[in-house]
Image 1: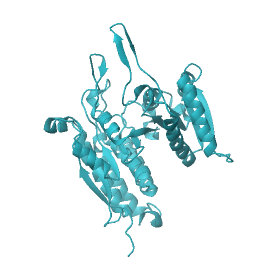
Image 2 (image 1 turned 90 degrees about the vertical axis):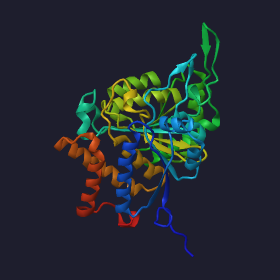
Image 3 (image 1 turned 30 degrees about the vertical axis):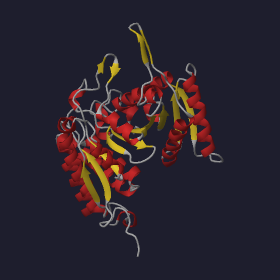
Image 4 (image 1 turned 180 degrees about the horizontal axis):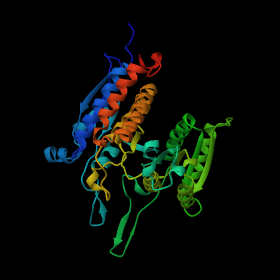
Length: 376
């Protein structure tokens, strides 16, 4: 007897859905409607199972991340996560507190974050830079998140009231893992890969650069289509402002990545619409808005919309489910939806309806994807 393919009606993709709290459940509902529409037009089937996560979970169970939610995530093909928390992590007695996302990262052994940033033509005028500088900007940041200065377990200590220290460390295994992922992503794009570090002043950066370089060069042996360059983080931040569209795949450490991600995202303007993916070293990966908290938690509260979560579901299709045709279809519908926003002035809160309408239009009037790839 032949085994049914994954994503078929009898073997649907299992998606763990963590709506979060605050605006999270509403934005998640919109996104699941979009994913279901994608499934309708690509003959893909999904099984959505919800898990408690965030402040609402804490009120009911006493935990931001109940054990039942962790178990759900581990037996799923992917996790789609909404926003959680109305206040960013606070400190008590000088110790950073853990939020629901950090608890999830620890439980699932997440080790690499992807932060794609695209400046859509319809939104170029919102960039703080001149439109000509950001035209066509499409970069992806590959950030190591299990080690470095912001690892899950901070080995730092307060020696007394007048001093404190935190340790920055990396292992060859950690660097090799991110090198492999960065290589695969660069290979699928332009082949250009840039490592950003501070190897001129920090031993751990020099170690990261050498280990990463050795791994990349080993994987690219005999090939001319993969190019690895290095740049110091201070030089990179300057060049990013002067020629942002020249960069493609950027790989860096945890702390530098945390800062660079926000700088790159700001090039697309004040809207918080960036998606993110967090890859696991041993199991299920997570997809959700790059801005993990509710909008009210940020200094400049952006208009609430499901755009970041919808774009994250495209990453889920591409990387977790290996359904690139469906991901391409969704991204094309997102572009059409931005056209409608620009032309008709629709509020961003209605973005899911615009994407669903774009999918229906393309299905009726265009060849939406290769029939052999997505079941048309």
